Amino acid sequence: MKRYYYFAYGSNLNIDRMRSRIGYRPKYEKGILYDYQFRTNKKAYTKGFGFANVEPMKGRKVEGKLYLLTNKDFKKLDIYEGFPTQYTRLVVNIKLFSGKKIKAITYIAADPINKDLKISYDYAYHIEKGLNELSKYYSMQLLALLDRLKGFYYFNKNNLTYFK
Image 1 (cartoon, rainbow, N blue to C red):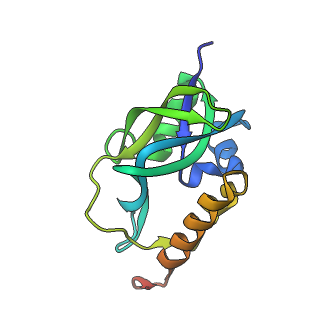
Image 2: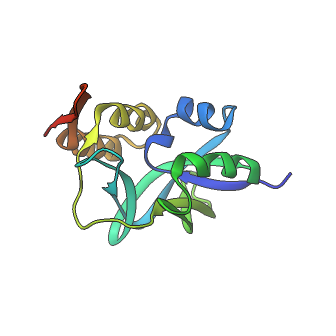
């Protein structure tokens, strides 16, 4: 069965989330996507909140995990990623922490906006849980960004309320 590398940079950094989405704990390596930056400019389902995205930006980098997945795994993941209307797939060049260069598939926002949005504490939790194996410098940078972007929301009977 043929397998392809999937580059995860957002909530799918959390191996437990990946297991819940595809049904098993996939093997992974760590790598870097050069000349891209991490953003939260993909509109979420809750007004004013966003999901992770990557966008081209010369000189920047995004660290992530590379999972080896089958086509069947990608079909399962597509459901969670809202492919192809919410996120599209892009083949990117990744440099593994070992130094090897590979091609991988990642998801990018189909219709990003021009500003970063708040993210829910739950969504931030999944990203944070997966950062422990990435470089300390990158993890600290991303944690600082996530702390600035966290927003809290809760449901009540009449409407959705959120705080910035």
